[in-house]
Length: 193
Image (cartoon, rainbow, N blue to C red; front, side, top):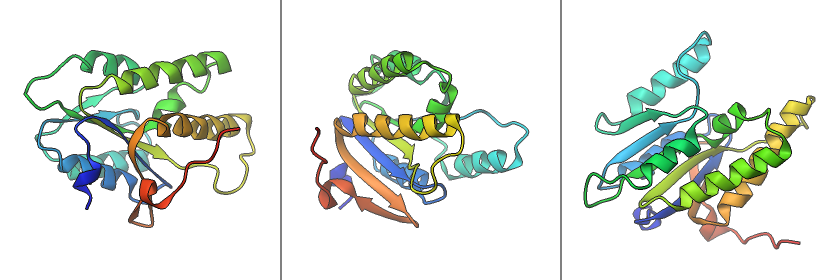
């Protein structure tokens, strides 16, 4: 049963490859919430890329009209800090962050030290939320090693961020080929060295 995996408070990770259904599954989980839902969009607004604009249109059409949408872009941590004390009803809002990969892309120029600091700030802001937070994150590195340094940095940073946040997750899902797999029920944590 899915709704038993939707806590009153805590982190829920939804990962998977491109076009595998992860955003749709995250939206499904959010639709089970009885309180307000805030959709935090980290990607750029519509621009000159027709395929990106098509994705934005699909996401907008799928979302219920009563969800509030906040286009946070690179300012995810700042927005989470603002939201952590805000509550307009007895039930805390569910936050849906889509996605951590596009948020990371805004910060690829960070030094390693600055990136690690940013990840700690993100973790702290996520854990301080009064309601559940569903986070969409892309799976990368399942194939060929990126031929560019920036591609390698993106892959490595996203994988490390995912492992950092997974330590604090109430539930986690791998969505692939339109199927959602419950990682907490089907997996074991990798021992740290």
